[in-house]
Image (cartoon, rainbow, N blue to C red; front, side, top):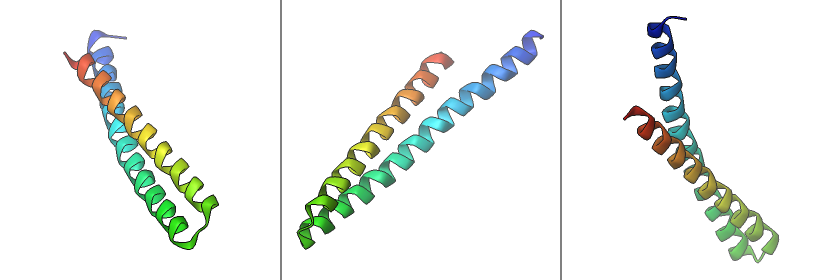
Length: 80
């Protein structure tokens, strides 16, 4: 493998990591919002099971957002 091919492959990997980070942040935000809505609906209807499921979805979304932030930071650091 030539240096040019290796650099090209590294560029694709870095773009993939940054893009994956962005996707995780967006999907995490969507899950967090859905979880908040589910939690609120459970509160309005008195369904504690829905509230718990909503909280879980919220937390999952926040965690996914954090994974995305870390992926983007790693990508930014690798570009230096």
